[in-house]
Image (cartoon, rainbow, N blue to C red; front, side, top):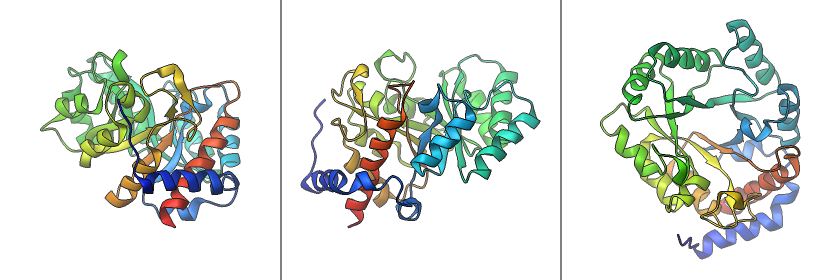
Length: 280
């Protein structure tokens, strides 16, 4: 897959390198809110951290939006425990934009309902999920009942159900528009689709984005800090700003699990620099 960048996109990246590294602790929230989309974190990035330490790390990143993985809010929790999770994040000034990734591959009505109850307890408007074509009709039923969006996460060539965004779109055609996508740009690249094209194709069904970067667009193990790779981050941000996308764009930093903060700080610096460059 060839990734090409326009002069404007390259300039955005250059401005990020120049301006971004001072931006992590420089009160970026107001500027980010003006972009429309919400720059945040998928809490899988903090999978080796406790909930308390994950919240502390969000403060260090000056980041106010999170997608919670069950490392930090067990799906076996009681309603009271989930209420405490919600309060812990909200008291730290962090808004829960979604939960997941949740595996919904078993056609079990009770289990699927339980997952939607979990999302509702955390006041999450989106559930990122890994279903199958068989479970989609059941999921659509609960999307309508709970008014919680289903963001189907594509997982690249290893995923036998939804390797690329186009595979999701084919499966959900004709369904409620709240049944849509979480476009993971790294897995999309490895599925031989330009991530920007995958995001554009999603249209109104784009409910979440997982951000990362790759030094080789076809290799999972080539993940690097955002800005150190070749994925078209400036072009993606420019499109999200122009298209009016209002959902989350969540950093999913899957490497260096024992010490993720240096790479995450670098990633946020770059991304905030890109946003500043595009708004300049």
